[in-house]
Image 1 (tube, rainbow, N blue to C red):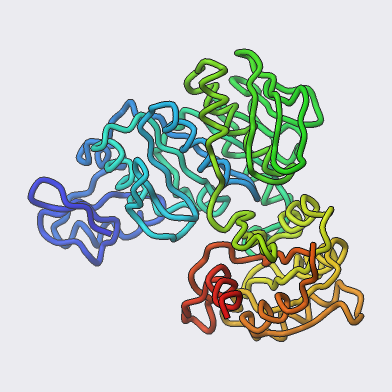
Image 2 (cartoon, one colour; image 1 turned 90 degrees about the vertical axis):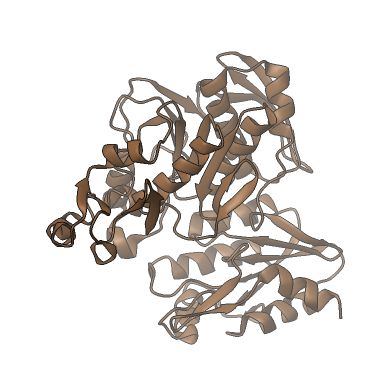
Length: 427
């Protein structure tokens, strides 16, 4: 990419270089530095790049990593800080935002470092005090966050995902743990135990163990009502979000804001309770019938969503992404069948794989009976599920959340679970 500066531009791509351009050297592109120099580009470090971009050295960066919960936790921190009157930026799976305005579309969970620096430049220009970002395991392993100084690092949880890349849970955990081996301020979900971390400047949150931030009392009926113990006193949460997993997300967000700002308990309670959730994450797209869309695409993610709705008779529509960890597919099927009265297994983003082959692998973990239905056409699967809903039942559509496409054989076709539901219900 290119970023314009002082009658020139900065790039991380040697193919874009020309006389007078700046080529920022990173771990990923170091081998192309000589080619960039031959084209007349000036080689600069990431620190020099930050100065050229006039990134505010006082901008506090908050990084959240973990298998599940990154997006909701990041959004909750961002919104809570803004509700407290703080200017803030955000980047992650949903794109990049500065003070409520979207400045970049959905892309990688964590962008290449130069793109992230472009977000920090925009945040600096808007006078932001904070920038909250999701940090993926791929980004940690590929050093896409090199040179960033974090005011706070947060760990949500570690469960099976990305084994197509990391090859083993041990390696996945090692990569995540490396994010927390320094002395920066960190906030760790101590109930999970999935990562190792440097105890210096470490705070914890939990539901089941003693921690820096933990509920004194909580209820999960018709939302979340909780009183959270913090080092600064007790804080109440009254939220419309559903499920124990979202209580974890809210405690992480509350803990983060406490560590960053130390606000008055009443002000913090009001600010965090205003957070209404994230599009495509436990999103209620219809109340009659009840239809919920969620991004859950791992065994643990699916279990957390369905377990939070276990008081309802559920129909689950889901698939699994192609060209990704295949070992999780039968586990996803088994978990869905544990909670749902009817399971309709369909296509997700099959990418280069055949949808029926993916469905075969999911169904291998499931009991074959009349309540297990296969239909590789996702729109037909959703329509069938809606037709089977009885009074008091709920439909949960899993895997894609608010994604606006379905990726098949290298082509992203327009497709939205939410829009499909609304179209079917309007007939």
